[in-house]
Image (cartoon, rainbow, N blue to C red; front, side, top):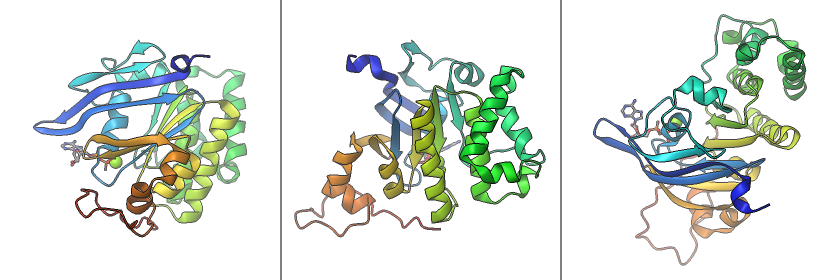
Length: 262
Ligand SMILES: Nc1ncnc2c1ncn2[C@@H]1O[C@H](COP(=O)(O)OP(=O)(O)O)[C@@H](O)[C@H]1O
Ligand SMILES: [Mg+2]
């Protein structure tokens, strides 16, 4: 297979503005079928803006978003979602008064009630046994980590071809974060779903990913395979918390990473 055929999403020259604020500055990135790509970046780097623009929630001012060979940057969010790009937004945004199972089934709302919905529900419960135990519980009463599991499960229930995850570790303990990323890898491995995840928690995200992009102030400033990125001194220093290499220059305009254990 030629490499171009394995790309499911290709973003080129993407610019998104909020009034006079340019939040994305000519972003180029791509995601391969069956792979996890992560976008690392500090608070305010433009990570949510990137995912929201791909999902059609925010309109770009320039650039193209090519999904499976079709430009989607002008489509409404529900059309983007029906074409197979599903966003699990920052902060989960569950229906807090509905039960866990009702929230999960909401993800399959557009699919009617065929047998495959029950199969997918069983699959989500296999990934997250805790949700099976609590299927009747009101979602708003679950812990933050459990709510994130419901949000990812609900996203999967829409049968995405590309799943967009906005900071799944936000507010979670290290234990829950590891659990969530272990399931993100199972989703890739068991269903071949492509996943684009944005994260501040660089160590865990790189460990789970095939490809890594670094976003700073709305620009992609570095990218490479997870192995290449892990080996780079600047990534080690600024994102993985290693001490500065001897040849690092003080002039580099990177911000020190913030500790991200909650
Ligand atoms: N609705 C908005 N209106 C104005 N500015 C915004 C809005 N949302 C985000 N921004 C600004 O855009 C930049 C990128 O924000 P965001 O995409 O939320 O970053 P991240 O998700 O990486 O923390 C920030 O400077 C933020 O203040
Ligand atoms: Mg964000």
